[in-house]
Amino acid sequence: MHELAEAASTSLIDNLVQSLPQPGAGFGDDDGLPSLLAFFAELKEHAGLYRSLLGPTGSAPVTEHIRRRITEAVVSDSPERRDIYPEFVAGALLGVATAWLHADHPAESADVAQQTWRLLISLTPRQSNQPEATT
Image 1: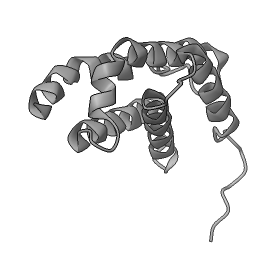
Image 2: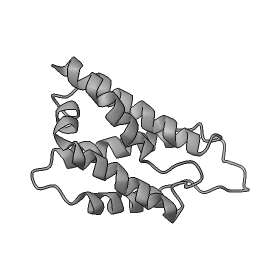
Image 3: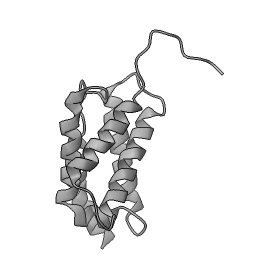
């Protein structure tokens, strides 16, 4: 049964990741909030499927696929960004999405998107002309 759900979710995952902020609308830019709203709206629209695929009894291959696709989307947003930040964003979005989908009384998708957005932009590394510290 999981194989069928995994196969069916491929195009939904593509739509889900495509709804994230696009290159040029980086996480420090207010124009990215609508994209995050679309991300959570897409999750809500197909909540039953994502709930079955994500979480303790879900599909590890689908979870990994979503994490990898989100990481790639963040890297494409900033090609010079090859550090842990894309992995951090992917893990954070996947964690929030999974917890929200499995909550007993989930908040509205728009509220979750706005809270997540505020956290992401507060943790976004800023470009700096100063050299990085070495350890």
